[in-house]
Image 1 (spheres, rainbow, N blue to C red):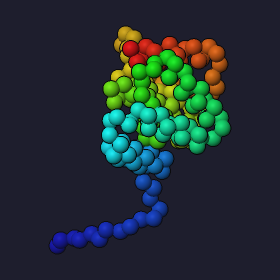
Image 2 (cartoon, rainbow, N blue to C red):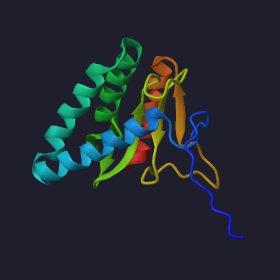
Image 3 (tube, helix red, strand yellow):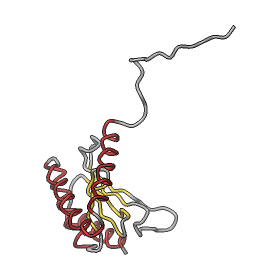
Image 4 (cartoon, helix red, strand yellow):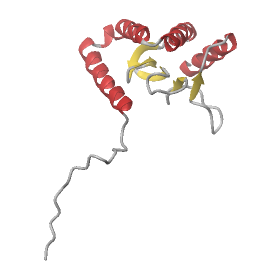
Length: 155
């Protein structure tokens, strides 16, 4: 006897895949890629700067203040990095590859913002080194350390 099973739709099961915030970030990234393709390479840097500043302006006050300060530090420490949006977050790229990014606390409902570095960042230190830093506020010492890290990452 062959048993047939009918697919049922369960409303009480919770999908353990991507969160709503992660899905929104992926949609933002797809939109960013389409926009960049339409603009072409020449307009990318200038438009990237305005896109990043507009995204920062949308942030909640605490995240916005931190993001504005980070933007200034990154531009001063590594002027060769090009501002761009990356998954809806301010990011800074070298040769089209994201070196570092800022993730606001509100983006994924976290208790702190994050300054992160990707593979192209030149931060290698032995066999283990940090690639992300939690930010709750920025002191003068923090700003100096971030400036040095970004300069090294972009070298």
